[in-house]
Image 1 (cartoon, rainbow, N blue to C red):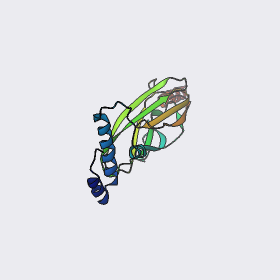
Image 2: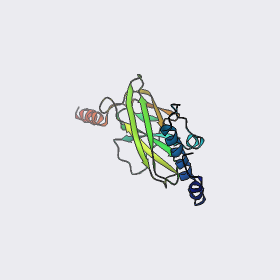
Image 3: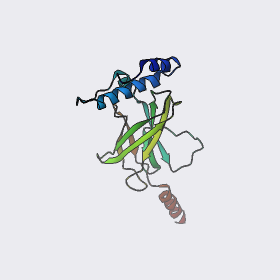
Image 4: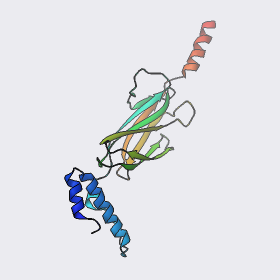
Amino acid sequence: MGYNSDSLWRIYQIGGADLALRYVDIAERSSRTSSGTREPATRSAPAAIRQFRLLGLRLYSDDFRLTASPEPTVARRFPARGTRRICFEANIENPWHYTSGQCDLLARGDGPDGKSLGEIRRRIDVRPDQSTFRYTDGWMPQALGKWDEGLYRVEVSVDGGPPTADTFMVFDDGPSMLFRHLLSRRGRRS
């Protein structure tokens, strides 16, 4: 084997179980790559169990109106003109509680006509004290100031794991506030 079992046991005894498992995984990977055999690398059991996992996905919007609450309003329906940006919040579980690490996040959004909203790829640094953490990001409308009406789909995955998907609806909220204001002023003059 590529590691010292006495050292591993000492690390485990002082509460470093996650660190010991990561150490074993690294040692096994390096021993596979340094040996002359060209067999495909397979993940060891501890590494297969210890992966970042997506716990939940929420959708919310950044709108043009100013709100007093610091928490976003989570919704599944958004107005076409009153919404500036539609965002997702991914709640992620960190399996490595005692060591720093990184995870890769991939988010894709599709519009009602099948057009892609875009792809968001991020490498996220994770501190050891974060057993769970949140990541938020989002998309702007393709037509400036107005989302197309219809059903949208968002799909998010972490570290190549199974994706979690959610949908939201954008509805017609009538003319913009500026347009309404101009119509009301014009109506008062007659």
